Length: 311
Image (cartoon, rainbow, N blue to C red; front, side):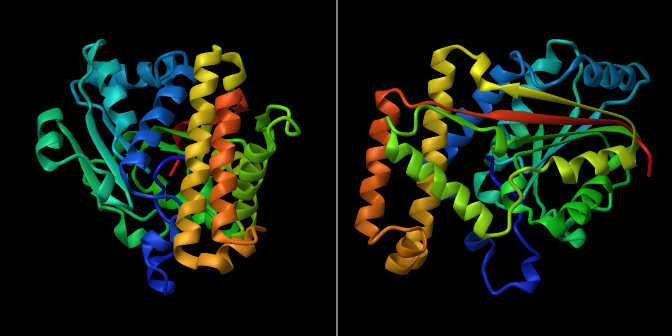
């Protein structure tokens, strides 16, 4: 689950943007995001752009124009830098822009200039934060935002993102399919199971949609001339990659738990079915031991591609 873009309109809530985001912003979070990007890249066969997308970008380059690409919910921009590297090998040098609600994750201005990638703050739920572009993007990418979009927000958030896309352009959206998550023997690894269930319960309690297919399928079919969907599962990866994914899942759930306890103390612990903050932290530590013993939590990613955007 990458750095999110927003969980609600900032001007309609008393909570700060950071408080509405369920994960953290420290060095461990940056490490988790980098690991997550590596696992996802491996799932995609070592590259993030399919032949369809590359052909689209190549045709734009052949027309004499630099392709324009943006990444929404970009975090520290790992996806953008991987795409830049992939396309450089094909002699394609696109304009690359990253958008996120939390600039704290962005590379420094010096790093952005050196790598020719720019980053901007944006809230997918607030159309006023979307730039009025003279030149829109040929390709828009989004990843792992379902943990911060409640049911009624999907359509307006989707349409806001479409305002960045060039007519005829391509949009790619990737989400973890939590309803297809697989965990090792729960009786053998009870603490990892309990912490994982806690994370899912937090999503459900906040009205977040774990199965995003019913929302994304009709939106893609309505706004694009061609749509396709694929699934990728970490069960098909070597064991080392599965273990990295398990470690990443532990880091996600531990971050969620820590932030929840920091904000609510004993009351938050009881809400999560722990008797105390101390018990919650102890179970989280024991869950890490479960992962070290061999517990695996394999994920399935759904990838939606819309080709030929029709405004």
